Length: 225
Image 1 (spheres, rainbow, N blue to C red):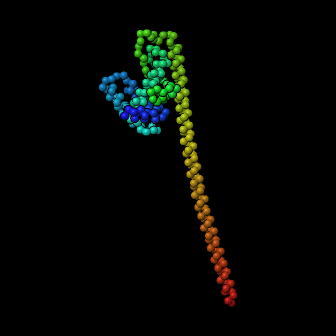
Image 2 (cartoon, helix red, strand yellow; image 1 turned 120 degrees about the vertical axis):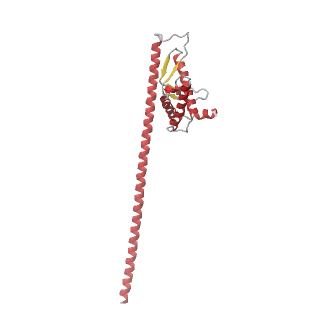
Image 3 (cartoon, one colour; image 1 turned 180 degrees about the vertical axis):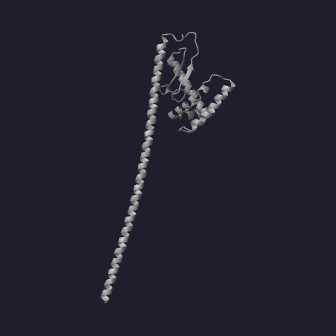
């Protein structure tokens, strides 16, 4: 079963991952709760029961269960924590990672690389050998925070551009369908006109034949007299 979940996780699209994190943000106060008492565990289980229902109603791929979505979420958190530890140089701080573009990080152990947009908070374990919030470290933390915020802004702009592009494409498709409908109606009208013309030509020919027959009959009568 774990093998199947791992294979399915690779089929998540960028839209699906963003959708998952939009839902996770709604339950962040529950899912990120560090308490392990019965009430907290029950609330987390209820949250993971509700998330797949909302996810599957809006996803663009095959439906997912709570185990698959939970595994994807944990995998991204693990990847984000690893990147955070590498960039923070193990400083003893508690910081919010606004966005981590893990698409720039090489895949490891078959884990799908994806973009994390929601805020994920991680805290490192205190160490006696690490000084906390020294004046020298503040500019460095500020620079990293600004860099992360800039990256977050670019990803949001790219996502908005992609959404706008998809909307424009959808509108163009609707316009094409409307044009095709009009053309079909015109073709049908032209076909009806052709039928009417042929019927009129047939009636004219019938009249010509009738006139000729009347002329022949009239000549015969005159010859008899």
